Length: 213
Image (cartoon, rainbow, N blue to C red; front, side):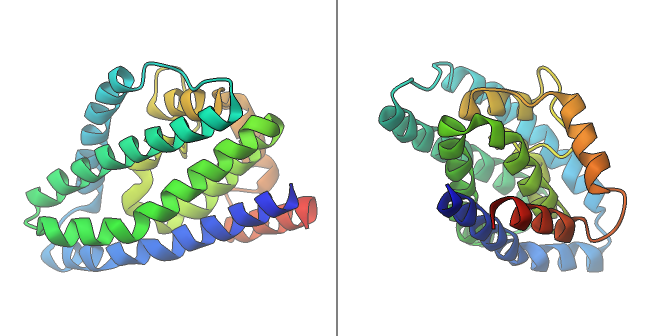
């Protein structure tokens, strides 16, 4: 079990580090006066459209057999990542960012996103009690740095505002991890971790180290 947790920690850190490929786009937006809030809003709308497609595409739940479940989960994660890529390309096109540039940047991030989701899914199959902590940890680490991915990660079960019935994060959690995390439990974890204070990721890393070594 400790090996899986270590794999998760390393994977999240690699994902966070890989998101710097989008810093150039952020700098361009800042120079040209583009509103990042506007970009995020447009991207969120595209993600909502992709969610409706995915609800149709991924109607069949993951099988109970562990091996088959892992295989189909990986296929489903790949499908979601492809939908996210399409949404990213469309939104960047509105800002005249070349498609090849967007896809090249996303290609550097995509494997790390995939690995994090698959690791959490594998843990969920054997130790569902840990899923909430892992999702919470990933959100805490990724969202401050991976600004451009925040709306997209909801499609994979990582929603920073806590899942609500019908929202993308709740749907994805039920599909990939077999359960949606109750909103109240998110609020209690936020409170315990002191999420209103700075250096919140450092606190979560300390918590993981104490729990899993």
